[in-house]
Length: 398
Image (tube, rainbow, N blue to C red; front, side, top):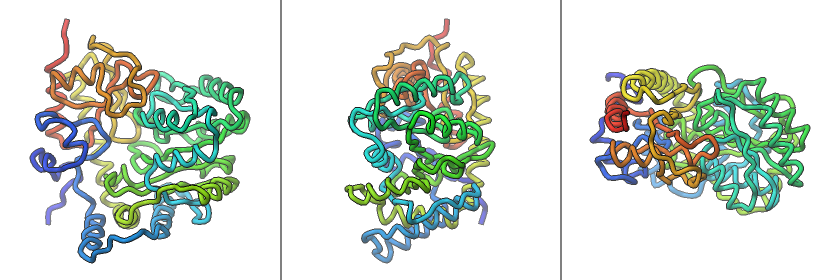
């Protein structure tokens, strides 16, 4: 049997048969390069596990112990981290439900939640819907943490709030920045100085293209903080959701508090699929990372050829490209769409109408997002080429 690369096995006509949001939110003539869903077939161990479950009618209530053990083993193999202890872990429905649960435990209504904008839009919507207040700490021009701005945000949050929280995106969405060990150590020092508890969203951790991922809780000084991890992004399993909230050694209060609350757990199929992925799909993941590096390199060339006025700094993680299109002279609607993941305004709206390519609009990602778009390059070479050709054929030239 010929070996099929993860990002080369499907053609557009096959992908258009899918019924997920990515492929059904827009008309069929639109190329969907927006939401974080990859154009891949399932890893064979995951497909086998799901098919076996359905064949045997194994669709009951989940026992998530296996999932925690599988994630723990994966973390030890890939990151050298052995800190996922079942007594300090809580399986949850997905990463954002885990984040929301942690926010509810670690803070109170009216407290500040610091975020590094531009950032994943639900960071804003989940925070605000919980009655907390977003405190923005913009990233630096290079996409990395700006510690002067971060310390200022921590100081404001600690002044305004009794129990402030820092919601960290690691690796960062949408920039693809991988926070270094030294940067994370500095984060922990600041959090200790100003009394913030850190919640680290590490959903993209397996998708580091260059460098190394450092789990926040693997560092000295992280004992009071929590992280939420999942295989849904790395193995394309948003439709089989599961995640684990992991508490530091001095954060058992979080787990104890969650036991007293109604917090949705993972789905049974999510536990089955993601456990199989963590246990048996290392080779598939390595192939995927090779493909993503190749697609990112291709994207650099395609942007230069078709959108030469746009600016793109390739990130070190994820399959998401953050494009500065301010030089294209496209209309912008300001920051009114902050936190609205499906809101299409500004440049994204222009490209959707004129090029029939769906992108995520930068304004939804908060301060620093206006005049940007996020593009998902986890697709076939043919689709990526067509998408950039369409974009290049439909932007206003002087």
